[in-house]
Image (cartoon, rainbow, N blue to C red):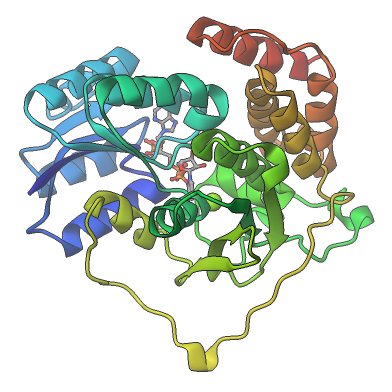
Length: 373
Ligand code: NDP
Ligand code: MG
């Protein structure tokens, strides 16, 4: 029985994780649930799993007695206590840059980290990987593309690896002309054709910033140069990613677009679970691939720019995008302004050694820059 801490338990990744746990009651035992604002769902989870700790990271006027851990600090202390009571793995499904600190805390406490929060790797992959090595803990990617690559590299090795191909759904605006992209509203951007996800990542999928973040994530997680990470649009989201070898062989990982697959893989790691969700029916499957359009989706080439520049450029890319997405959601800027702003922010100097203090300083500086664009 593995004991599991679920961070961001009330979100899209959190819900899928709890569903995997419900389907595998003999294997997984939730030890901690965290939420930021959704007290009602958190308390409900506490009723379903009375032994699990409950942590609320956001501010609230009235916190029910069942929630013993509050604030950012409260979550970090709950994680420490989890580690002392033998919790094996933390699933990080927190949205945004605030996921970094809990990722480090989970690793510091010696837990394996099932990581959906891509910002952790984009912002501080170097620091987080070092922490995992120091603590003899594993980082198991949950992002579907990185989960696919992780599994493929474990099966086929890294010797003679030529490239990694990340697949991208292309999002709801895959075929929309540039002039119309300028006029899209948040509710258009939130209507993703294949995945059902949280608000921020849905906007990022529509702008392809999500794929940009994933390029940086792949570079840092798998220690490959940006030139070896390619992106191909695959609207059906069935092939989750591919790896290519120098002899021309390509290996792919396929499943239905359902985050419960990569989550289940991460929870059972290094073992394998048995399928409890829909599987593919090849007799009714038509899939296709096309090149991404960098003119309509400039956040993708901008991510390559940040990945190649390294240093604190990925931090600036992530922070500027996160802030610009908030402004777009508030309808204060247009959809195409997100990329325009990120480009201006990246024109500044983001060189520097990647320490935790430097990461947070660059994050803060990049967010402030957004309001001067
Ligand atoms: P959601 O917005 O659906 O959920 C976010 C979760 O994090 C909620 O539980 C929320 O609590 C909590 N949260 C929000 N803000 C904070 C904060 N400042 N501090 C601590 N907790 C916070 O997001 P997703 O589940 O879609 O995404 C989570 C992460 O996983 C992101 O990094 C995303 O990029 C990544 N990811 C998601 C995929 C998906 O399919 N959804 C696929 C691949 C990666 P509350 O509900 O109380 O507000
Ligand atoms: Mg993904």
